[in-house]
Image (cartoon, rainbow, N blue to C red; front, side, top):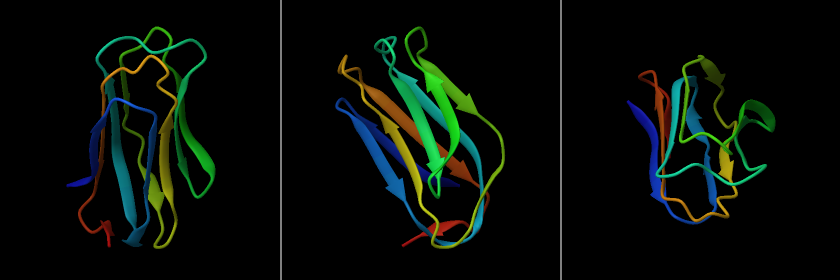
Length: 100
């Protein structure tokens, strides 16, 4: 089940706040070209960094750790994207994690 599926060409700043708890089990970021220097893709849960990846030589991030998200906690995904790459972000979760 997808919790989040977004595509863009500008800076990424995506936030979800589940109304029911659950586990994010797969975070995928794809860029159409390598990212800029010192530009990290960062995923946080309730202001705690869960994933941080420098995209200077990368086009893909796939993180399969199971991250528990409690109801009302905020999951935020950011990337500066100064190179204006096209990005696609997908976050899959176990069944039961839902947003309003």
